[in-house]
Image 1 (cartoon, rainbow, N blue to C red):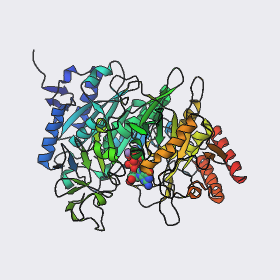
Image 2: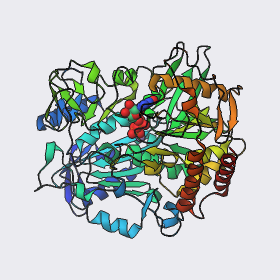
Image 3: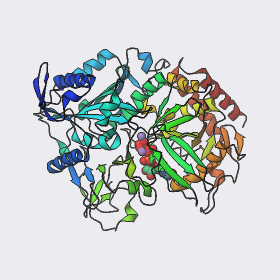
Image 4: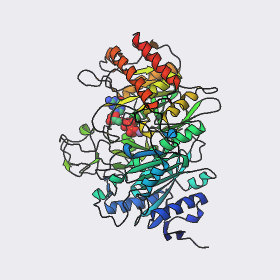
Length: 624
Ligand code: GTP
Ligand code: MN
Ligand code: MN
């Protein structure tokens, strides 16, 4: 009996194994690793087991190196400050590569570029990746991360293996996904999603490394190969670009798998909501990035007697069972949430979730080893000495930002005080309603219900929102973000809409579809709706509609609440009329713009049902 301490790969010869037993891995995984050892030429191989001991060792190393800084006030929490050039997802460098362009990009009108899923030919993708990947791990360790999206062994779960040269990625992956040796057994005869990530800084690296954060921003590339179930990410360590289980796998690749297998992979939170009578409903809601999913998934209800339990805050995998009921799981195991704006008032449950075992990225630090970001002004003494995410001294009230607007906390979902007891149920939870929403400062009412499934799919397809800091865009304007999936689509958006439409067939009982807007403002630019915990009042109305209660009237855009059917008890003055006003001109313009957008973007791929819904809506508005 002996242990194998190295593997032999064709060109490289011997690659030392720092940890793990290569020869006990499934053969197909061995092949995958050997191929990339040969290509990426790491100095060694580290096969992760997902244990706490392993994480502690990595943390120790990163503390020594200065990549992580401890937050002394908390338990096992750390700050990581990235290179300021690597702080968000890079959509312009996010590609989908399929043999046929039409599998990825819709048949746009001439002269129009798709805003969804950017296609590159396999040849071009191959050329671009082969300019980057060969030798890119020279002098660095290659970590092999086995992970499951979804509870290990759940019929809805899928396995991935990520190779990376970043141990920050390893630390966050083990929070966000289920990283464990058990994954090797769960894999069985199934396929796994192949994830390859490199910071793109082989040694010797002659450029300056900023903040102990190696990256290669000029060369960033996040290439998806849905047909091979493969993702290759280069040059960035930022979560959305580097934690490949999340957006790359659980949304872009999974949306393609879902199309092929007849289910849905969506940018949605899942929550359970129990009313004072003890009735529980499950809701899934899609809002674009930084528009309030994490906040809603964890709200502390502003109404007495209500209980909210969180199943997931960002991604939902949903499938109709044989009785036709839609079930959903949260494929993730942690929260990668936006820090700014989070405080004990707006989201106490998130606050509780990250008091231990959390990696914070690009937040500020207080002198006594606590966290700080915009939104915590009222919870700290005014004279607290703070260091910004860029390392500058800062006092509350200073005119610069202490934390990056897209700074994030990465913590285990199990630490959320209101995590649902069924959040890891292999079958998932039964979904009663789907909700879309975005930041709409004007024109769009607090809530409305679509007339039926097809109309609801159109409501999702026309989703728009004010831009935020979650991606690289600058300035504020209203952008289309169909189904909140614009940055995360893995295939032809027209085919995706058709896939949604097709789900409405026996025995499937399709849920009702709603639209919400917490962000409407008055003339002074102040929010008309208090939002956050008070949003439960809107969810209450949604649940009434799910039960078929007569609390709505027919408006041109959908069913809207009859005046007084949303419980406003205990709130300050609320301007109902301003919240629910439907300005005719605004909606005429909006209908026209939406239809043009869909026709431009989808051309012949625009499902006729959706075009029909657009036309019917325009007609209803014109009769207003
Ligand atoms: P990703 O994780 O990037 O997909 O975003 P998300 O949808 O989870 O967004 P998140 O919940 O982190 O919210 C982002 C921002 O929206 C924060 O700054 C919140 O303070 C703000 N926000 C959330 N809910 C509300 C609300 O009900 N009203 C108002 N006015 N702001 C809100
Ligand atoms: Mn998201
Ligand atoms: Mn979130």
